[in-house]
Image (cartoon, rainbow over all chains, first blue to last red):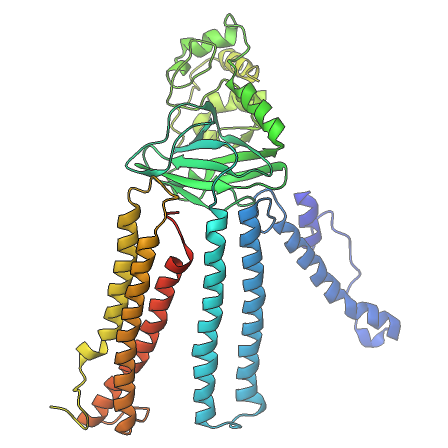
Length: 368
Length: 125
């Protein structure tokens, strides 16, 4: 699809339609001239449509799927239209004053324009915008009526715990407990869920553009973000505060489903892994010390450093949104960890034999 | 020595209004932050602090209004005219008065903007 879009925009792209060579419009019949004169307009239309299509994505604040994103998008469009109107008026006035009727008004009229147009008008507009923005805030931060989810921003992935009990505040860390997961957050549509956001070491920021605004994850305090997703779907979240080497590869998927599906999902995530412990891949996993960092509930692996892998294969991506979930990608992440995600804290296991890596990846893929 | 009026303007009279704005800002945000710390009960109301901010705002606006009216009155009564570009003590005085008027106007609006959140927020969220 990207290639198709590029083909429309890039002239000379292999698959783009061949246009006839340009000819002087004077030599053409009137109706042909009319069509010819429409061409630039049509080109513009294609560019504008393609540009607007870029606003529609699972990671666009201009394609809202949540109450807060909707408010932000409305604010943005109102301010954009207002800015365009003001820009046109200012440029129009300057053209009028310098080109059309220079010297038509005296210095006094100019001063009056500056006082009314440059002082009074902006004060009124900014006050209206400030009041509008302020009255949105209590509504967007209203009490949650959905689940409380702890999100710990780690280097460089997201530790998630569903159904925790705790409060925000300073000089504290995230509450313990809940159903652990990582790098994918499910949310019930139509309910206000509360994120409790923290970090063990450096500052990050959780941003799911389609659903809500950003909230920083700051060590030593618990921040609160209430999100109200309105449209079921799969959206992207990112780390929006530079946090280190793999900052750009610290993403997550947000899956918005019905409240019933959400309950069923969390119940599934709470179950231990349903795999046999006599598996070859599991043996290799334990032999090579993967359990020092990773937990697979239902087995002896109980490390707390890295992401919980109990239901790894039920997620859509691996390495915090870096690669789609597949056997090949699991194998390449285990074998070439730093090539896939430079700066990641997990060591590369490229020293293992290929069949060993394949066995581990194969076992991980059974962790549905 | 006053030049054509009661108050001799200087840098201190010039920055009076922005200083009131700064102190008002500090007290507004500082007091509510103190009241809400450590921000564990986010739905705790801040009624007392809102009344305090309201009173403080009224005092700040009155003080800035006084500075504004004083400087504007003296500038007008003594025939102030822009631009103030002559090299004389008299014109320097008018320039300081006019600058004081502009800064007081800016500070007045800024104090209102500082107080608006307290007018619309009811709790520690």
